[in-house]
Amino acid sequence: MITSIKDEGFVLKKKVLLNKDVLLTLFTKHEGKVLATAKGASDIKSRRLSAFMTGNLVKVVLRRSSDRYYLQETQIVSLFTSIKKDENKQRIFYFFLFILDALLPEGQSEISLYSLLQKILIRLTRDAMSKNEIMVSLKEVLSKLGYGSEMVIWSDVRVKLQEIIGKKIPDYII
Image (cartoon, rainbow, N blue to C red; front, side):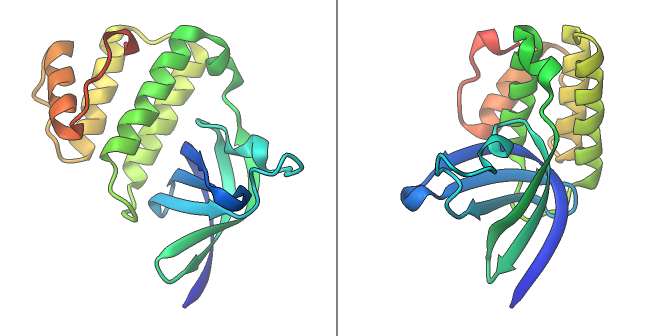
């Protein structure tokens, strides 16, 4: 069954495939985390290429066929330029995207988590976030995903994240 879905979402990751296709990992408002194939999108002539940068907020039209999503249309909502210009803000921004990509289950709507990410990014756009604000936000993300929020210090949060995702988190991230 083929279904067309209109949604908005954050580009968590992109991977260039053969035949100039791009595989996007999106965190959408209503569908949750989805992997969507954008046919021919890595072609240098593609007008959609700039929309696929990690961290962009985009409006999308997805075609769902069986268990696969295909990107039909994209429109850039925000590039988060002010965040991407500041190295410290950029590091925090990409850290949250990395964590969400690692922890979110595919195809499960997470509207409250999506709203939380929006609030975090609005806050980050306005000012730099303190380490305490980052930790509070990160604990809220973990709590919404069912991992609890009993950690008190950054090293506890870091160890918990490393256990969950099975990867070491570099010291310079935050």
